Image 1 (cartoon, rainbow, N blue to C red):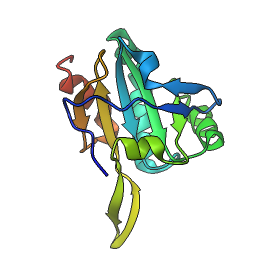
Image 2 (cartoon, one colour; image 1 turned 135 degrees about the vertical axis):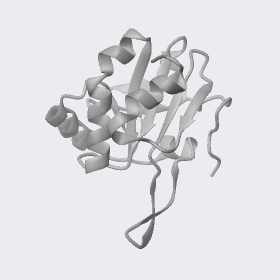
Image 3 (tube, rainbow, N blue to C red; image 1 turned 180 degrees about the vertical axis):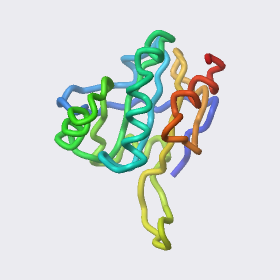
Image 4 (cartoon, helix red, strand yellow; image 1 turned 120 degrees about the vertical axis):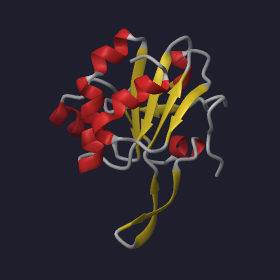
Length: 155
């Protein structure tokens, strides 16, 4: 599976969010998008990352940056996650992993001595033309917004 790298066109996609609404990357043409892939709702690292983006969401919007999360969790799980933490951005339920695979963020992982396949926590900052301006592989879950702003030289 090919990883999408900086300077490449981001693959367009169609996915359903927590409310069953269809979201496409192409509908954000002309706008910056932070597309963050994360392993699972309601886990410590994923919750820290989502809450950090929530806490700075208005700042990101003021800088013209739209935020979209993607995991393989269901719409129902996303809906509960959003309600529990008052997340102001959509979460795409990529249960068939088509978006995850298109961006090349599915693969072998190691945790506590076990090897398994899963989603690699990765964020793509996509510019107004649909080009990946920045790929963040080493996500700081509690300081992710600053990583994004630094990547765009906006802080």
